[in-house]
Length: 172
Picture 1 (cartoon, helix red, strand yellow):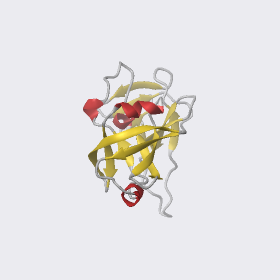
Picture 2 (cartoon, rainbow, N blue to C red):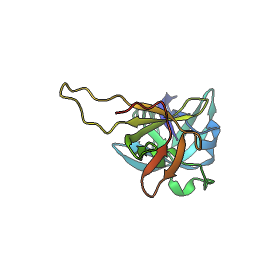
Picture 3 (cartoon, helix red, strand yellow):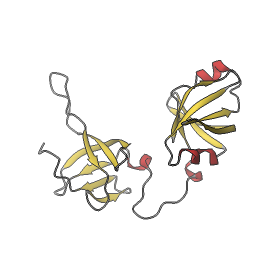
Picture 4 (cartoon, rainbow, N blue to C red):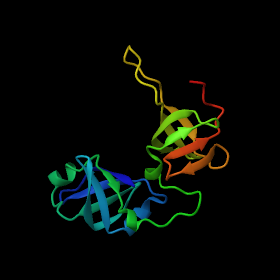
């Protein structure tokens, strides 16, 4: 849902870049998850507010500039049960990451490595499922628009796959 930036002041506050739309929606939650050393831990938000183009937040147990600075670069999430239910055809990005992407004939294009917001529409970054070449290089990631109906024909979370119709994909 965002990323912790640099320390803000000397009393444990941090800057936070929110990925929510609008960014201030993150302020509605009093418990956030911080990804530390590969695992997520809940933290209570003592106080948070908009600050310029970002947010600033103060967490329980983070009481000085050094503790705040140690959080720089930490990803911010929310507990799953706190998130609102989605309508049909809507997906949380976290649920799409790792899904296999298949073309119209069932050929695997790879797996969703990440999702990116471009302004016009979201896009999937697909990591091809080909092994590294002998010279250590590997196939480049593919960028495919996440346009439900036009490009994305089916998302089957239970089966772990997305079917796409995408003429911009080369034969592999």
